[in-house]
Amino acid sequence: MQVKFGLVTDVHHATHGRDLRAQMRAFVEDMNKDFHPDFVVGLGDFYGGADSSEADLRQINGIFRTCEAPGYYVLGNLDSWSDGGKQGFKETVGIDYSWVSFDVGGFHFVILDGAWLGEDMPISPEHPGQEQRPPVRLRLADGERLTGPDDPIGHVGHIPSHQLRWLEEDLAATQKMTVVFCHYPIYIGPCWARLDNEAEVVEVLERSGKVVAVFTGHFPRCHYKQEKGINYFIMRGMGQDCERLGSYAKVSITEDRLEVKGQVEQVDYEIKL
Image (tube, one colour):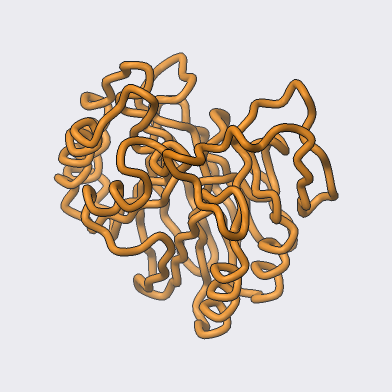
């Protein structure tokens, strides 16, 4: 059975004064009139920045919500430290989760919240990430590293242990092929944009034997790699460091095939599972 979903990440509406309403309308129109997905996902950084407000979030979310398919949200760093923080974001878009899982057709889907600075410190207006002065120790899936003096500050994420335990239990409870969504890149991309405990997260994903794909954003370039049967993606942002605004993806998955049809600057992929 085929499942289809639309992906948009790093919309960055109202970041440095950008207006992404026209691009979001184009995404919604494609979803409603052509693609007809089972659901759509915002992969984080929907809006945000020092000059953004709840009104900006309501503005862009109001367009996103005109998708006829159910909508899901992944918390990004900007969503978490902008006006109202995580709780304000959740109340404004109308969700009651930071991480969650759900089933569609023959597949299981998991949303993770990597917008944390450590075990007991979620990213927030009070703690936006400037505490991450180098060297920050990173336990990555491809080895330990330290951030350097030339790396951007405040872009490293973390999955706290209680969420990691939830993930392990959630994956153990399903028999379905699983797709994971997280704002922060996992296993790919520059070290300063990844999870500082990535190795532990990847160990849980691999040990489950059920995860076939991980979709992320945060870093403004498309990346892809496959490791131990898991396909890791960084998706192109709609409004982040683009030559052309408006990128998004249409994803179709079956038991033996994963297809990503990119729009604007998003790369296409066709992968055998």
